[in-house]
Each structure stands twice: as structure tokens, then as C-alpha cells.
Length: 282
Ligand code: 13P
Image 1: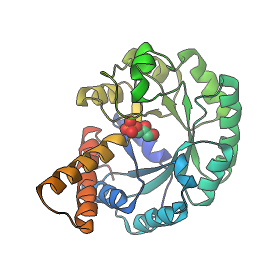
Image 2 (image 1 turned 30 degrees about the horizontal axis):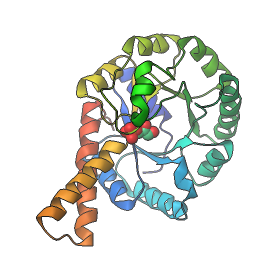
Image 3 (image 1 turned 60 degrees about the vertical axis):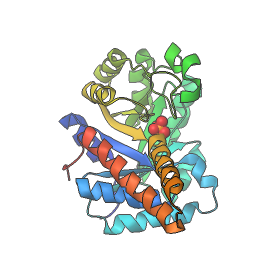
Image 4 (image 1 turned 90 degrees about the vertical axis):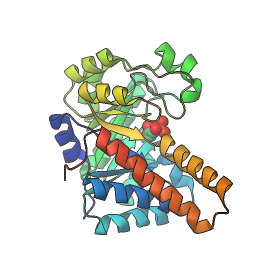
């Protein structure tokens, strides 16, 4: 199928009370496993590439591979720049055929985040690309006890309406207690804050830092208004763990390694698709 913006699918998820996962990929084995999961589950495929990825020499080839897979996929596919670091990076992604871009100005002061997000939105909307932005800052799991657990970086609900109105952004990533990577301690989500944000704006809300949350936390966040959940670290860690376990038991060929990675991605991505209620929607 042709690549499409994830916007309509996220609006449908929001209206239907379920969420779409975004999975990040860095290579072909991960991408293959994801596609198998999205097709087997009949779910809209939302695939993310990190902004930092563009500094790699093989970035264009990787994007071309995903586009090639999308062309023959049996489900609609969206390709999103995840954590775009600058206006220029977002424009580069758009020129490479991305359907959606996240501009991450979450470390900037509010006024600067608004100003830069607005610029990205103007450029992206001119060519039919949807934009996600982040208000508040989702930190890293490594520093969870000194940051997220202390409510540092949490989205200020009072700023949400203005941010959305002045930027024209399509989806909003919120900071409500999640973190990227492995959590130091137990993650605590503030679902009351999420409900408050949900009441104030209409656009789909996004939760980053999915790895390490419990099934109940995912369900609670989706019930409280999250329409898209980003998951990455757990997929890579579980794949690495299974490759390590297999290598302890027997000598692996190169092909065994990519096969274990792809089948792990298929299984774990399928798990999240089911958990978020995204299966059977396309
Ligand atoms: P995790 O790696 O913690 O799952 O977070 C993924 C993410 O939010 C990517 O944007």
C-alpha cells in the first residue's frame, strides 16, 4: 500500500478508545519483524526512525527499504521521524518521503518551542505531512529517580491550549511520568494530569517511553486519552537477550541472529498491537 500520514488513523484510534503503537527501527531485521506483526494483526503500521539516525551514512538506504516494504504491505504504513532535532532535519525527512514528523523542542523554553514547532508545522503542512510536538519533557529512565519520579518536566496543563493553538500541531506528546529507556525504579503515571490535558485539547495525545510500563498502566493511559504509544527499548533488549541465550546454547550463524531478531520483533510488536487494541482495525 502507499505510505499515508498516520493522522486519520490516530483520529480513529482516539474516537475508538484504542491506541496505535509506534515502533522505532534501525535495521532490516527489526523492520521485517514489525511488518510481519502489523500484517498478521491487520493493524495500521506506524514506524519511527530516530532523528539521530540521519547522521548515519546508510540512512537513505534504510528509508528506501522501509518504503519498498510499505509498497507491498497489506496494511497502510506511516513513516515518522521520531524526535526530529531541528527544522532542517524535519525538512530532510519530508524530502525523503516521511509521512509524519515529530519535532522535539521539549528542552527549549516554551516560547522557543512554540516558535520552532510552528515553523516545522508550516513547512510540513504545505506538503501534507502531519507534525507531532512535545510539551514538557520526557526524560530518560536512567535519571528517573532524579527527574520523572520528582515530576520534573511534566507537561503544564495550563500551557497546552496555547501551545496547540499557536503551533497548529497535529499530535501532542505529553510528559506524565514516563521516561525513555530502562526505568530506574518503578514508573508512576499521573493519569489525572493526562485527563486534564485531554479535556483541554482535541488533538491525539502521544505517550513516549512505553518500554517498562505494566499492561495496566498502558490500559489506564489509553483509557485516559492516549492515542499513540512509542515503544523501542524493550524490543531491542528482548531481541538481544534471546540472541544471547541462543548463543549460549549453540553456535549461531549470522542468519540465525537476524532471524531471532526478526521473530522477536514480530512477537513483541504483536503483543503491543493486541494490548493497545490496534489489531483488526484495517
Ligand atoms: P522506549 O525506548 O523507552 O520504549 O521509548 C520509545 C520512545 O518513546 C521513542 O520515541
